[in-house]
Image 1: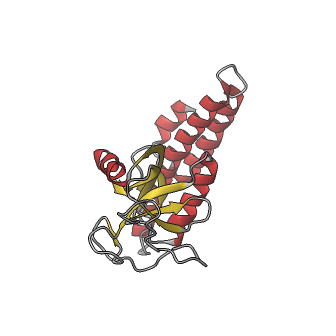
Image 2: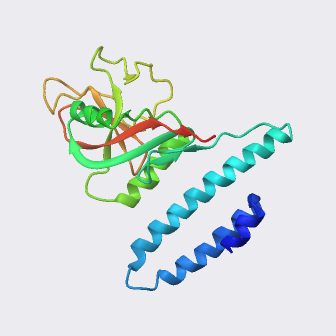
Length: 215
């Protein structure tokens, strides 16, 4: 098959689809070996990503030649990130306060998540349920620490569409957790609802970074 590829040059969209199916079948056979299911899934995911990138690139070229709107294709830093539109989200399960969580995201070249779309909330819920665990609340990049009641994202933009818990007084700045009140926000990964909590509490976090545009 590889000789055929060399002779014919570019495979095109159909050719890559056939090649992907062929390799997938070979990988499926290998999955029954002692290497186990984990190795199989990782390899299959890598194949899917490569196939997606190639097909997306070829489709973009075809769209340009046909004078139709050209779709944008994106990729995230690695397999741990969730691609949602042109953004990448990463749910990290180690627990820190809000400030240190923000620093940990920045160390990765990212920031605490700015959740502004339904798609982002749905992606967080799906990933949160898959991760499971005792802690379902995750830090996001939302705070009113500068001025009480004026909630801003970490990029200093004002919140427009909110997901505060319906049927409650959230955000209520309850001082039961301390005199500092509740100046930072978490999202419940199981319900997509927001809550204000003390910034000193320890929670997992969601980091966010711009996805890389594939060319």
